[in-house]
Image (cartoon, rainbow, N blue to C red; front, top):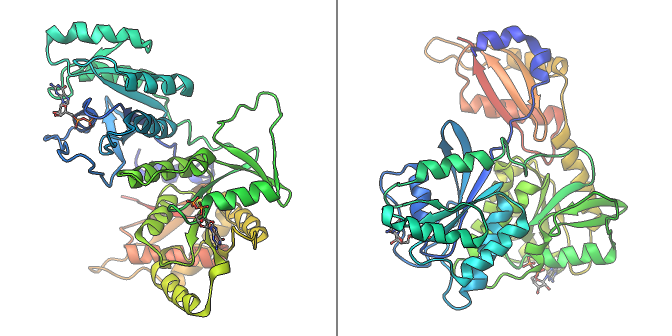
Length: 454
Ligand code: GDP
Ligand code: GDP
């Protein structure tokens, strides 16, 4: 469709446009050395497989944009997370659990040459419990002679094993066709239901006080047992009432289950965090105010913003605060958190329960911003005044004109600006800043895209 046509459809239609549907998520799981990384690289169509030779190497990236037969999906790669040999079985299971949580469908990779192991059986157990669709990939079937090995995997009870050679690409197309059959049109996790208690992810790097805060909230207040018939919920979520308002705290199992400091724990934590954020409408990013801000803190904040969720930043352990540290902290905030000055910042103490009331207020404020819709008339009134007072700079003798804007969706607010030419990044940021000054949006990321009329 051309932008001309879009213009002709008028504002009303655009106003009713649904939110961008989140892509379905496919996770590749299995024990070490079955060929997960090789498979992921194949699916991504990398010419050379980037298989790590060094055990224990963790990759930065966890998710990748993938495509098959015209269907886009998000691929979760767990191949880079090598587990320790001691206690391997439980570690593999733990890792698989996270990936399964995250996914709408799972490719379970088994080494057909080796056959099913006890560790594989553990993962099968988890897969069954999850109820998620599973495609069984019988890998390392490099030629016809391996087909019998693949057939032996019927015994796992996961349906038809798909014989694949991740190394050579054999059988890959058939397997991906089977994946598309079971992959939902859009991510089931991303389906943000407007009704019911709001969903909160309590996130932050290890030892910031997540489990302490959760205990404080769930203990001092009331853990509500949901007795409503038919409300089946993920048992890893907890319903907690704070100051009379119930919230779902998502993926609390990940908070309550202590993660051991092993190699790969970072990767594990990052997956957990991502899963929790995506399941939630809002993230409370907990930061330890008694120690310097770290890269990891900033990463969790970025994950929240990138996922388009509402955000509250909570500085915990405030009971340890003294003047020296406070002075340092203020400088740190000015320097490191400039990108998210719009997020409410509150100081709390999970130990004493101090300021948990403020936490509730911040949650409510941010969620309200996240839900906000600016009527088209008001938006264009504001924008009209803004661009006539501060027009876009002239570039190469041309000056792009902004025709009008509309809010395409909420949660988070997304705006589409129609213009006669390219709007440069600086000017877009200027518009975002003024939008915030005018309409607030405290605690919510906002998205602005520009459509250029030909
Ligand atoms: P991961 O630990 O599950 O990610 O496994 P990798 O992708 O790192 O693969 C482990 C080893 O198995 C590597 O030496 C791969 O080259 C090999 N491998 C992976 N897929 C195949 C395959 O289809 N056939 C054969 N013969 N070897 C494979
Ligand atoms: P998690 O890894 O994020 O779940 O962190 P924990 O809740 O396990 O807390 C890590 C450590 O910090 C524990 O020793 C807690 O007792 C301590 N801690 C948590 N919150 C506070 C707080 O508000 N004040 C102080 N002084 N210590 C805290």
